[in-house]
Length: 109
Length: 113
Image 1 (tube, rainbow over the protein chains, first blue to last red):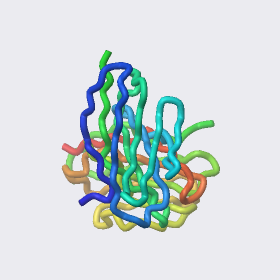
Image 2: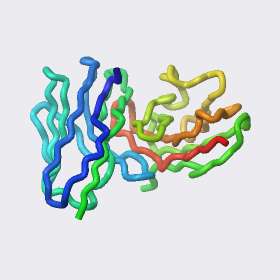
Image 3: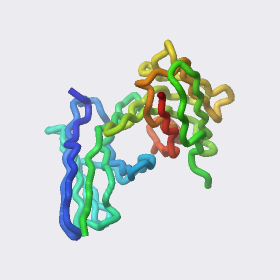
């Protein structure tokens, strides 16, 4: 079993739709969590950090549930430019980032 | 400000040949990382440097892979000899310090024939 697990998708949604991605982690010692975005044939880029209180950045909302070891990302009013792979990432207390395999989103016109 | 620079961007070699990748981190970043990313997977850490010291190389296949960061700035990752299964994207990342945000370079896409 992988330390960070995601549904690889792909998720195919129409423009304007709301889409949610989920992620689970198995190492309870993980101290911080992030969502990274990776466009096709490009490098991963930090999208946002994830906090237990939940955090929002424009159309994006991330949530962490430590009791369930579960992380989510919600995208509202999807745009064509949101099409990408979204990587769920855990930071161990050793400073090592553990990446999930990524969830692919394709937003259709 | 310049981001993480990697070269070459693409490399095609025959199996059993050696290959080297170069990375220049963001200026002032003490921590440098080399990752391997296979198709359809997330990046996996190969080695992490804090300044010139390799502090986490547990995932580096030491029989054929080596890395160095002699002056604590740029770094080289080498594979000798390359195998078919080494075909992947090799990503370099840097951060101010351990636990800080990591910024990735564009990667080197390696194809071993």
